[in-house]
Image (cartoon, rainbow, N blue to C red):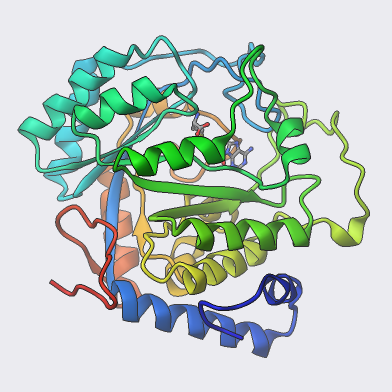
Length: 356
Ligand code: SAH
């Protein structure tokens, strides 16, 4: 079944599908649903990577506290505001502030930045600060933050523990935080990495089903990219799983997940991610957009910081200025006959595309 009611079993079958003609049907179905529910508009979100400090030890991520090879930075409030101004100048309707889980980012300090952006610029504000306490999430929401991104990374709790060790005395459940975010009135986004060692087809099918159950406002998925500065990337952690169950971290698998996610979350905002563009620099962005995605997140972080926000190696567009990113993406979007969105580009709650 190729619609919103696709079963978990069918999701798994699609994830294993190799027949080109069948896959073509999937791409066409996802593209039709995308067009029907969110239209031809591609929304651009300016990404500001405000700090690469992190207290966590995620075994896949280059920002992990243990990685002593990374030079750490935290942008100051004026630098962040200048990036937001630049994003607004390019006509982006949203800025996304992302960071490692950095408690040097003080609650009130970030609240003041959010307030300033919301007061002075015509922008929606998205935060992606990791597993912060409820009080912080509340404070930032009160300051005017519109959205929050927190990928649950995998719905397999054993695998999650392996790739994302908890802090001492703090058993945190990302699903619980996602529920809190919804209650606080954030547009709530999540997602997973595709092809993490230990991820099975059955788990990934459940992940997609979870996007549906939760009625996610935003879903970001990208291939897992091994980082040699991490234990998982060096192969020091080896999950006990038979090869035929392991999901590959390929470009094709990522398109399948993007397309299936569009089917189960027709109204969601779904980005064609940088990790996808990293795998296929020629046309990864465009193919993501053609197979279900409707959002792109151009980086507006100053280049000197951007190169230090190295969650994985070889990130696409690493040395391009914000201006170059903007021009490149505008050309790519035009080349596939889509138009660039204006305004916030919030989640559409109506039954069909709001084409205003
Ligand atoms: N501290 C925030 C932001 C983390 S970076 C948080 O924990 O939510 C944003 C995303 O990058 C992560 O959620 C993860 O899915 C992705 N990421 C990290 N390391 C990666 C890797 N090696 N390959 C692919 N994606 C990765």
